[in-house]
Image 1: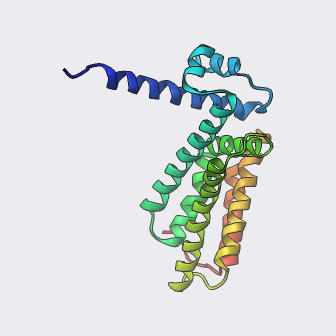
Image 2: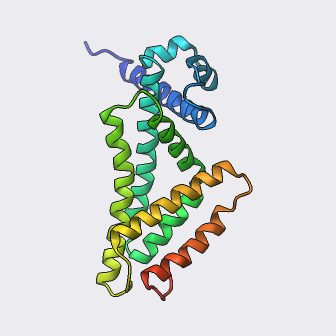
Length: 207
């Protein structure tokens, strides 16, 4: 006889685990990892500590899951942009302004990665996830620069150097927006974009 109800129970368990990771991400983006307790996370999520321990072994286990959740969410958004925009100039433009629109969410990811790097819970699995986060950005940007040069759109700029430049600027701009509430990240990105086009030898228009 087929059992009923179990898929619904599994779905509810997944929903609870995801709610915990979202709450942990929000809480850890405002506080240091060491200062946050399981009770704090439970209070943020509206769940008991017993419910948290049902899904995760301890705080470190929840941190690992939260980092993976945050990065996978960001990677999904990165992929959506790179798949929907083809022209290298347009894709670089969209990539820059994606960070403006998502600066709060991406800022949480960066804060979590920084905390992770200073914690005692490093694992090879999370290290690989972090590398994939930056590797995806590197691949997209390097491909844009190379295609732009092949098409004759860009007359200057080495793909590797440009990808590092853009990635470093975006990290700095996003983190600055988290530190200084009055910081205008959109204005900074607009200035940086003009500098970037100059570095690439691009004098056309964005389609």
